[in-house]
Length: 154
Image 1 (cartoon, rainbow, N blue to C red):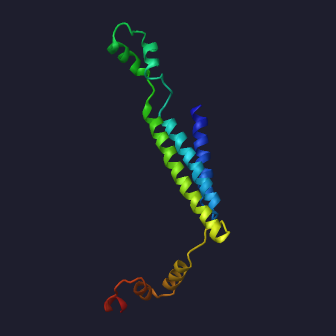
Image 2: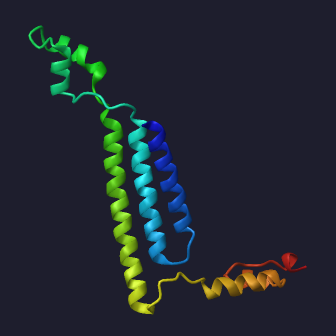
Image 3: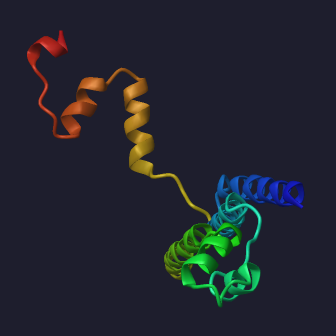
């Protein structure tokens, strides 16, 4: 069972990474969703085997409710489920949901303004990179508002 879950996590991460490397916003959002599901499965796998329910399972497994609360808690504590992975998975679900809502809003806004789903390169970044390649590093630095000494020009 653990091997199947590990393979599922790997497939979700691989597919999510592939989709996030695409240029369309819809695929990027879907890739992030797949990676979020992979992270949730990974967190649940990290918790190990499922244990008993903390209150009801401990009393039944210990069978020493009549002996006292301390005895029942001590006997049942070893079979309790660890709540930390479930709490972390719940937190990851909430964070992923918030990010997904934000990215969907951005994608919708981009579609409304440009009727195009593709993320484009910034033209100004291309121009600065091209000028830097052509040997205009000093002009680029001055254009960015940085001060350039005369010694740097020589």
